[in-house]
Image (cartoon, rainbow, N blue to C red; front, side):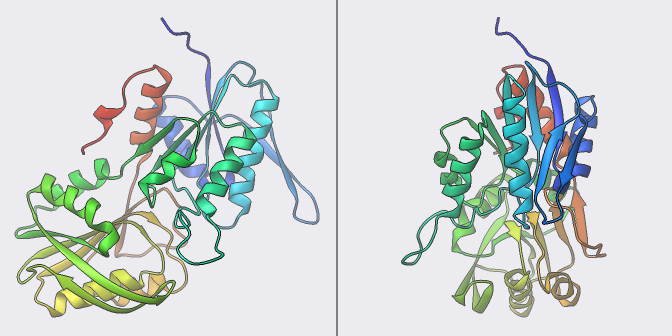
Length: 312
């Protein structure tokens, strides 16, 4: 029988509420930490309790600012130097995942760099959700538990009891995800084709598939400026859709995103709490992934298979 080591949960500042909920679902509380801040902006996290011989789970999304990533790296380093048996970085939203390849000359591959930084800090395992690109898992030389928000979104979509349901991919890159949803829900599939001339700016968008009279649900891994989602919703409604909703795992919601959603024909945007919202909106519904992460953490800690936590 494999030995089990004491388990402790800690959180960075960016994911405090989510971490508290994960710990609560697991049946424990967050460990105590503090941060020493210098006048020039430098900071130093420290643990206020022993982690010697413990399996330490550090929960922190790495959304901007970069302080969130740096805090996670420093907490990993501190745990290793304090003789933790194992350090698991629970990163609900893995920032820099959009930089997964060189898509133009002389550009960085930020996702690989972040993976290298986490390894250099001493992480033993990564747990994350809905990476922007699945191959990013291969950037790591440690185990990666890649969770999917479909375990949360599929039951929610089913609860809406929408007739003539259609699942839409917001772009060509999202067809695999949308196809999985459509097959599981036995719904039609629509593909939105978009043309960009620069990042975060969509110049043209068209639909491939029959949408007349359909209640369409757009599925994506993230929603950033909401430009694509809102343009797609307008296009789908103009082409005869009955209604348009969206489910997106990571609510980055930068720039004019909230204003765009409010003015758009989107009935609702369902997101998870991988990233805390900057403000509330009657059109934005937050579904918690705390229970799912707690369940997977429990299985990992007990050397059990986590495949049963996935819908597809």
